[in-house]
Every structure is written in C-alpha cells, then in structure tokens.
Image (cartoon, rainbow, N blue to C red; front, top):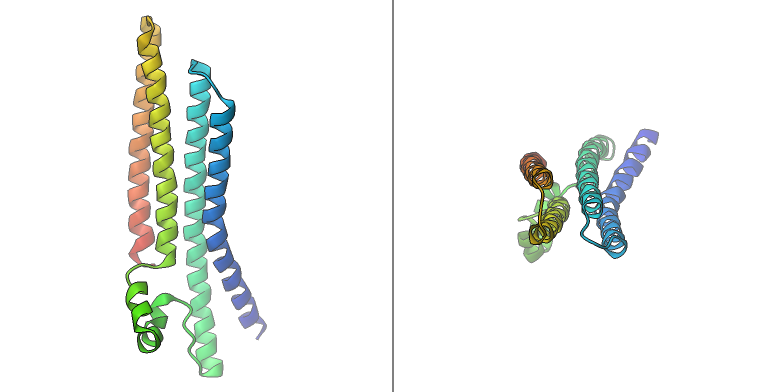
Length: 194
C-alpha cells in the first residue's frame, strides 16, 4: 500500500507541475520581455545585440521548459499505468488516469463533453502554448533586428559594419531554421503517442 500511496502522490505532483510549468514559463517570459524593452532603449549595436542575446536565451529557456514538461508527462503516464494495475489487481476497480481510459465513461454519462474532449487533450494545448511563446519570441527577434538594420541603412555604413550586419542576419536566419526543425520534431514526438 505504501507503494500505491507514493505512486498517487507522484502522479498528483506531476499533474500540478504540468500546469505550473507552462504558465510559469509564460509569466517569466512576459516579465523579462517587459524589463528588456522598458529599460534597454536605443538602437546602438550593443543594445540591439544585448536584446537579441536575451531573446535567444529566452527561446532556449522555453525549449527547456517544454522538454521538461514532456519528460514529466512521460513520468506521469508511467505512474498512471502502475496505479491502474495496482487498483485492478488489488481492489478489482478500474479508475482511468488518462483521457483515453475515460472515454467509455464520458460517452455514456456526458456525450457532448466526450465529443469535444476526444479531439484534443490539455497536454496538447500546453505544447501549443510553448510553441506559440517561441514563435512570438522569434517574431520579436526579427522585428528587433529589422529595426536595427533600418537604422543602420539610414546612416553611412562602412564595409566592416556591413559585414557585421550580414553576419547578424545570417545568424538570426540559422537560429530560426534550427528552431523550426527542433519544433517540428518536438511536435511530432510529443503528439505522436500522448
């Protein structure tokens, strides 16, 4: 019975984390963005580089939190399977710990909710939230770089400055391509079996 209690506590803890991590991440990103764009004024090279660097770090942070959520979800699934086995073996009761297991009950008791709930799970919405945050950060990165480039093109620019500008553009494009590849793989693997 001690194992059962530990498994249930773990499952509840993971369930809480699965809701706290996405919304905590969104709040943290919002606070950092507010501070960055409130306190960092100007279009100088140092300011823009600092903004772009902080945005890149925010993207890495969001990706890390997304990976963490996926890993926690896997642990929660494992705990749910163990709990269901113990309940079925010892108590001869089957209480579903996931949406798929609850379909038969929902279809019988609440047909409308069942038809709505089968299409998408809350966990999928969390992944969509993470991807949306990353997309917004990428748009902000592009906009920040674009404003900087427009400011530079209005001034007389030396060749070394132009090389730095093009290297910055290439770097941003590479970051965006890598992030798109990572996001596509994450979407595929996280939504495939969950």
